[in-house]
Image 1 (spheres, rainbow, N blue to C red):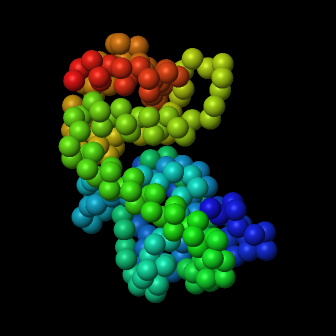
Image 2 (cartoon, rainbow, N blue to C red):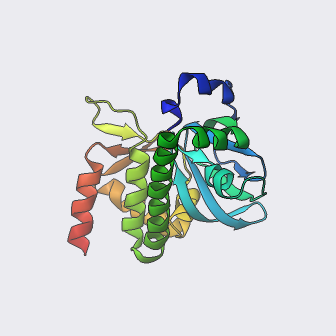
Length: 219
């Protein structure tokens, strides 16, 4: 969405890309700004104080944080907790400048509304899936999402996840306990679907297909 903006609008976005370290909990929504994620993965979440509790949605590179608030509730403070699952870099646009862009370009506004609708659909689906699907299926879906962030390499038999999410964080994301997630990961490692290298997970290139076949057999 941001990459498609007219070149003369780009100066309204900060040239520098602030960074957030992995595993850091932070808050946004109190600022009058919209954040464009350049790299990394962010989970917005429910929680109390500064304690991560339950994932609401995942934001990948290219997503916007704070845009719905800018459009629907300009000027209001609506703090939301988020967890950086990997080092994250982002660019910032002032809320008023973002709203002005949408007002000036109807085609741009329509594209944004479509992207917002798609993200909302995924968010609701995620909440339902996390509460209904069995643990192995929830874990598989999350790993497939993380796999999509890995750069393509046609010659690689294994894909190394670009984030170093801890097992405890993965468990929180899919509303499960750490021992339960570890048990599933260990079983999949024995079956050759994944391995651990230097503290990170590596998945086979055909992990999505193989894991779907396995889960269908278990039903």
